[in-house]
Each structure stands twice: as C-alpha cells, then as structure tokens.
Image (tube, rainbow, N blue to C red; front, side, top):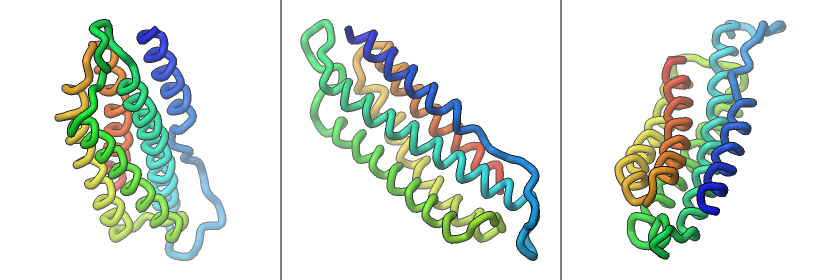
Length: 169
C-alpha cells in the first residue's frame, strides 16, 4: 500500500513535469530594444519557475502523505516534530520565492536584461537555500528507501530547474 501510493505520486509528478520544458521558438514583432535571446531567456525562466511550482506542490503532497503513512513498524514514515515543521517551512519558502519571481517576471514581459537576471537570481537563491534545508533535514528524517528516493526526486527536479534559470544569466 505504501509503495503503491509512493509510486503513484512519483508518476504523477513526472507526468506533470514533462509538459514544462522550455518553449523557445522564433518570436516576431519584438519591442524596440528587446532581442530574441532576451525573450527566449524570459520564456525559459517562466517555464522553469512553473516547473518549480509543480515539483514543490508535488513535494508538499508527498511530505504530508508520508507524515500520514505508517511504516511497517507502525510509526509514521515522516514523524511529527521540529524536522517535519522545518520541512513544511522550507516548502513554503520555496513557494514564496517562486511566486515572487513569477510575479516579478509578469511585470517585465518578454524581457531579460542584467537587472532582471539579477533579481531572478536573488529569488532562485532563496529557493536554493530552502532546498538545502530540505536536503539536509528532509531526506534524513524520512524512513524507508522508497520514500527517501521520492523526496530526493522532487528536490532534484527543483534543483534542475534552478540550474537552467541560473544558466540564463
């Protein structure tokens, strides 16, 4: 039962992330002073922030399910306590930074200059810091290899999207 639920959650996450690849294409009718490369970078950042949002949402669902799931020893796969609170707090911080970055990009449509890149870099830095908390505490607190792998997969998906955004600078 535990394995089936974990596999189902992981499968749903993978399917949802497949549709979030960068949507780069040739853009016409560019505003004055905006290059095609800038528009493509902006579009890639938007797509990867969306991928972060989906992976983080799936991570939140998985963490809550793991907290509610009893292992073979009758104890929760992810027990209550400060670590559980820290994990949920880190997930919330990722959401806050991703939402702020997405909102910011919506104010500068289809543009990607140095100042925009730097601002997005500060948001992805906050996401990376929260990911470090999840990596240090989250995967260690989860009991069971399959559950640890599931949490690690979501963390890896978020980290991969951050790397892509960082490469746009």
